[in-house]
Length: 478
Image (cartoon, rainbow, N blue to C red; front, side, top):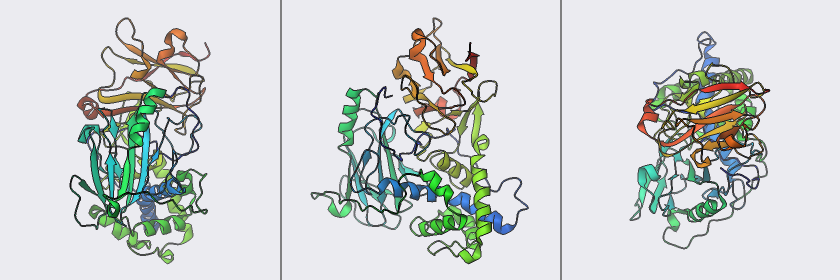
């Protein structure tokens, strides 16, 4: 992680990537209706479920609008069809999207492949860990090239929309997106040193996106067109949740024209028609009055935000949300992950266990307690890539601290105890210079921990390995 990065401008790169964890197996499809809502008026019930269903799509589009509303590529934003390359990890001033990442440098690009396919060129990564997942408009990862799946040599991909057919250039592999909207949320591992940042920058500078019509020819991307009506200051999640119920459904209906529902969504599509949403058509507001639409919005947002305990399994106080990356008809899970932080990977690529309570099931509070995570001998997280534990405040943002340290990982040169165990100290005050290498600074109050395990081994995926619980180690005021 970066020890003293230059504070970046406000960005909207998803922490999701950063997300809530996952177990390996996909959950069975779940109803989005809450237990107390079975007897609600049918129209309100349909509208509430429709909001949950459409929440990821509207959130993706709002994030896209903000991230592409610039004239030229910047470190965090770029016009559609161009990469925005983060040059350092975010710091504690980052506030636009929840659960940011301090292990990899992002390379993010938004595509409209409904116009024509786009070819992505990835340079030789020389063995470095990288991941270039591609998300459709519903937040499903439909392809995930990277070190695990395609190796680290040079590679090229033609990304097409659902309706395109044509000749694919020689040496290029076609990836067909289910929607016209595509988000490439690339991540390249970096140790965070100035020297390693420079090496990653060389890789980022060689990432290329070229429309198929310009393939094989000199190509310079056009300047972006800035829309002054787009709110560039309010976080996308806040923008989405500030929309009135009818405005939300209007936006959702418009997006369905180029981001069609999956075949498995047919039952939900039939219910959407009851509230005035038919794919390919404008929202019929006469079918859903404003008051009911707003009631549906409130009920849906409550259900999404309260889903964490049911988002997966809990082991030693760590929640492993499942599924992530691909959701099928589990619409509530998909909405929950979109709200917590866009960009969740497939479990084979990354698992994100999240903890809000200690080993005694008490909420974390570093103004009261000091904590410790004790890994057994040879018991650090089993990964083929890398692992880390990140500190967040209750809103899933980084916490300012004297070390400017937001994660703890093997790159911090953790000290072992004489018996081979490894302690990670989670507390607001320094545990002392002899333990500083193993200290993850916490705020003086509530906090959230998120582990990241990239390219996890099978024991991590299937639950054969369990993260140790976070134990109280003493009083914060001693």
